[in-house]
Image (cartoon, rainbow, N blue to C red; front, side):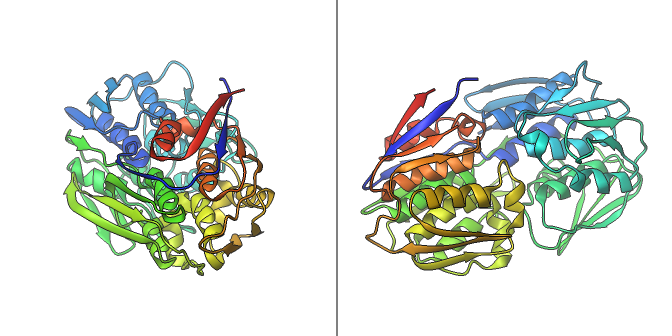
Length: 442
C-alpha cells in the first residue's frame, strides 16, 4: 500500500453545499442484517470505504451473493438466519473494529469455525470487552494472551440468552450481544450505562425483528427471522463533523452539509459545538428508513471554551479529534473528561492529538480520560506550522487538515492513507470547499 501525506497551507474561508459519504455504522449493519434476511435487500447511499468493504467481502466469503457497490448501490441476496457457510480461509477485516466486534457476536452462534484477522492496528485493539460477555452466553472464542485478534470463533457452541449490565458505554459491545442474541435460547437483555448509537436496534426493527427497548435496557429473543427491506443510508455525521468545525472556525464561512443522519444517539458533536457558541441550524428534517435526516448549516462563529458535559461524551466519541481543533480556536479553556475510550481507538487519540497540538504550538495537556486545551479565541491563529504524525488514524489526519484554516504556516501530516477507510474523496472535497490541501504520495 502506497503511503500518503497531506501538506495543508494556511486557509481563510470555506463555503459550499455538498454531501459527505454514507454513514459507516449503518453501512456495516446493512450488510450483516441483509445477509441474514429472507429475500433481497437493496441498499442506497452505501459507504464504499475500506472498512465497510471489509464487512461486505467477509459475507461474500460466507456464501452471500452481494452485488456492488456501484454509486453507493448494493444488492444483498439474503441467505436467511441460518444460511451462512464456512469460509475457506480466515476473514480479514482490515482496519475495522466495528466489523470484528459485531461479527464476533453474529458468528458465535454459527455451526462452523471461523477465524477473524485484521491489520496491525486492529490486531492491537481490545477484544475481551466482547469475548468475555459472549463467553457468558456459551460462546467459545479464543484470543491472543493480550485479548486481541486473531479471534478464533468455535462453531456449534449453543448460545443461551443472558442479562448483562455493560460496564462501559459501547455501541459495539451492545450490538455484538444483540446479534449473538438472535442465535441464543431465550432472551438476551442488555443494559447500557449511558446512551450509545442505536442503529442496530433500529435496523433489526426495520427488518421485522422484534426488539424491546425500555429506557437503557434492550431485549431480543432468539429464534426469529429477518425479512429483507430497502435501506437508504444517510450521510455520516462523523464525516460531516470535519466540515462543521471547519466552517465554525474559519472567517467569513458558511457550509450546508446535506442529507446527514441526525440520530439522537450521534448528535453530541452538534450539542457540544452549540454549547461552544457555534452558529448551527438544522434544516429540512425528515425520517428515512427509521433514521432521522437533515441538512446542517454552519456559519463562522466566535467559539467559547467549555467543560464538555460527560453525558455527551458517548454521543460524540468519534468526533473528539476535530473537537480538539475547535477547542484550540475557542476563547478560554475547554476541558474533556470521561473519555478514556479514546485511548483504545485506531490510535490513542488523546495522546496522539495532544502531541500534534503541542507540536503546532497549542496549550494542550492530555489527562488520563481526556484533555485540557487553552484556546486563543476569535481572530487568533493557534496553529504554527510543523509536522504531525497521524499514526495511521484517519480521524487524526482529517482533523489536522481542518487546523490549517487557522494556521500561520504549512502543516505536514504523515500517514494519511487510512483516510479512505472512512471518507473516500476527503482530500478532493476539502480542496473544493477551500481548504488548501495537497495530497503527496511518499
